[in-house]
Amino acid sequence: MDYAKNAEVLQKFWKSGLERSKNWEKLVTVGMRGDGDEAMGEGTNISLLEKIVKDQRKIIADVTGKKAEKTPQVWALYKEVQDYYDKGMRVPDDVILLFCDDNWGNVRKLPDLSKPLHKGGYGIYYHFDYVGGPRNSKWINISPIQRVWEQMNLSYAHKVDKLWVVNVGDLKPMEFPISFFLEMAWNPKQFNAKNLLEYTEKWAAQQFGEKHAGEIARMINLYAKYNRRVTPETLDSKTYSLENYHEFETVLNDYRALAVEALRLKEQIPAEYQDAYYQLVLYPIDACSNLYEMYYAVAKNRELAAKKDPEANFYADKVKACFERNAYLDNQYNNVIAGGKWKHMMDQMRIGYKSWADGKENIMPEVTYISEAEAPKEKIFQEKNGYVSIEAENFARMSNSDRIHWEVIPDFGKTKSGVTTFPQNVYPKSDENIWLEYDINFESKGEFEVQLLLAPTLNFNHNKGLRYEISFDNETPQIVNFNGHYKGELGRWQSEHIIKSATKHSVQQAGKHTLRFRVLEPGIVLEKILINTGGLKPSYLGAPESEMLH
Image 1 (tube, rainbow, N blue to C red):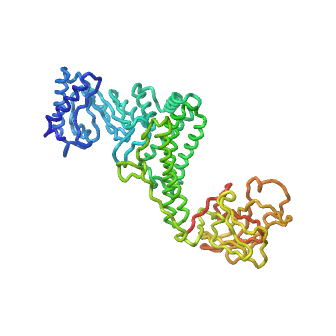
Image 2: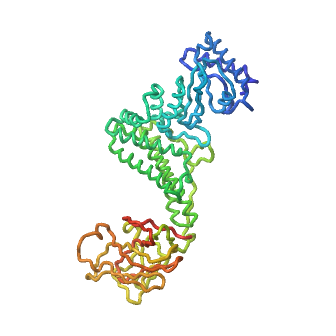
Image 3: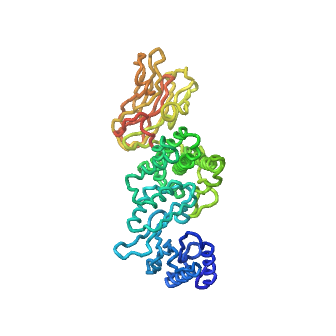
């Protein structure tokens, strides 16, 4: 409403408010903002706002029957109102100046200590919850007390000690930062950089007893830290990098590990604290961890779908499962714990924002499914970082006979699967070529070691041993008996659940080459192939599978 045109109506409204609150203990705000949290009009009309304050103070004096300065007042320099102050507007000495943060917990302005201070003193208006750009932040706690303390201590050190206000949105998910803010406001000097976690432990002990206070404090501390990296509403599949420094995988594992800890501790929490534990600890951690799982799956789905890799479908299903789990966790909070006391408390949208403003319901991210017909037919593995690693099931070609065929055994062995021949009692004849071929693009050349990771099958054939042939391209195959020397001793094969068989090969030039693996007996199960071109590092499971050319 325009004060220049509607002063009488506004003055009547203000007067009725003062009359209604005549006997209350209160602070009266002076000044005015435009409709819908916007500026009052074009430009910064200082004279108009000064007239508004003068008129308001006359109403205060008329209603209370006392001088205006006898009623505590505050002028909030929120958002665009700070422009009036910056351009020279001032209010009477008795009015508290309420500086503000940027709605995200970062203080915008503090008193200049080199100049005379405002006699009415200063306050700060801080935010744990916010409706506005670049994205709403309303669902869960995103305010680690370390940042709250640092910014409020900065304010206090600048003589902001008359009034502290914090916008918390819904009280329910903000219990911990609210507790800290109010305790700090009561006695700011009690806190320092070294005792913040100690406060968190004391607070956890108040809620749950001493026994698990340390563990709970650590979890509350970490989840707020993780949520400050990026707010849950702003998080999406592009926030973290899939390509660089294993970043997305690292932050996902951070939250995943925290969720595992929270779920494990749940079983040790006494029954009378279970609902509180769900609200204050388990739900915020589990629900946010689930979001990270979902957006990581979205990112992987898009990456793999762009390559027409059918593994994209696994991540598409994962996105759906996480989206459904998000609804399940909300239902637990809203309708199951505390006998349904907190209905609708976790209905706040957090998935599917199209702008800064939220909608009424979460929207599942779009996913892409790849059909087998779309999948690339060639599988060529690329040497990188001095090695090639291939899961056995990802062969480029196979050769069967009328009597013998290859099969993949899913989930066999230590990584992905195993590949072997069936029937298991049929031995290849000398003219039966039962082989698998793997295509590799080498960026280097030289003598390379090929390691086959084979299931720890023993020489069950009267101690003769099991043999395979291995070769690159048209070279003469090497025949390897990988277990014929076994004499019944127990040792590394059994404890490591693998037999590593190595051969040396000369690759004369960089480029595409084909590795052929041919079996001469049944019962040989191949799990993985590792080729060391100079950079293969020791590991128990073998290097992760190399990328394929597309």
